Amino acid sequence: MLSADAEFLKAKWARFQRALRKKRAYEKAVRINNSGPPARFCNTLIMLHHNEGWRTIMSYRCVATSVAGFVQQLAVGYIANGHYFYVSGLIPPHKDPVKTDGKILNAYHIDVSKWTRFRRKREGWAGVQYLRYRHFYVIIATHGLHPPFAAEAERLVDIRRCPLQFMGYSIGCRRARGGGEYHASVRISNERYTELKSQFESVVLNRTVEELVSDFRHLRYEPYAPVRVQLFALLRQVNRRRKVAGLEQVPSSALRSGRSPVRPFDELEMEDKLIPVCLPEEFSTDREEEKK
Image 1 (cartoon, rainbow, N blue to C red):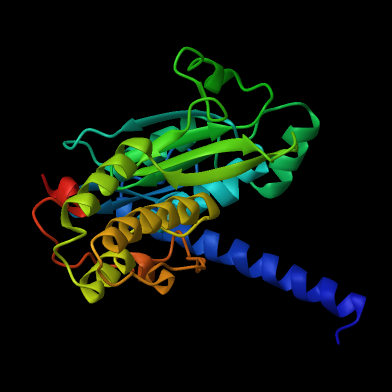
Image 2: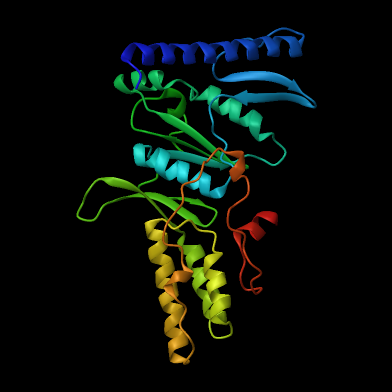
């Protein structure tokens, strides 16, 4: 057990090491660029010449490496902490997403320390966060003043009224039963859920229990509470049809009951944990839609 003085010295040494790493990165940028350092070196961006052009390296982590990571970071990390107002969009295919990240972080002054965020919050400023998965991005903010973000007032959407639609998910914010506080809500979007119901309806009598169990287990939706409710309702619908036909029931163990947290920005999460099995042609997956 370290004493208070030892803890203080340990924290001070860690800060020194971080500052030293930044200094070395700055010196590397100067050496590589030849033409001199960037106009302003700060915690936000370090510009490095990389093969075909300029590459942006950010200390602010904003690129989710999986669908599950994007949904978790948005719902648990941002919406649950009062970020309700958002702007979303797609980066054109011909543009470099990394360059766009840098422009957005600079324009909205997003990449700041937690101390700066705390000070701004006390002064009544809005907290703004940025998150991207592939070419899809969202900028989301709390209540408060923020002149650069106010310029997007016409495009601003309140996630409590209009959930964000992303990869078959509907990510929103709802009150608890009985009029409690707002909390993040992640469910399968209505359109996608309707598709799933019709798809299972078309094969429920033609597939074995083992095949249906495999189909359910390979649905690529993280089992948040609303998602579990939807999937259990879908399972009951399947079993009702099979019971009338005198077929074996699909066990509830076909559905995942617990969600495993992921690391949103970890390269180990680059590939989704669940890979869809070969389903009939009626079953279209999000992965197939992305390829088109």
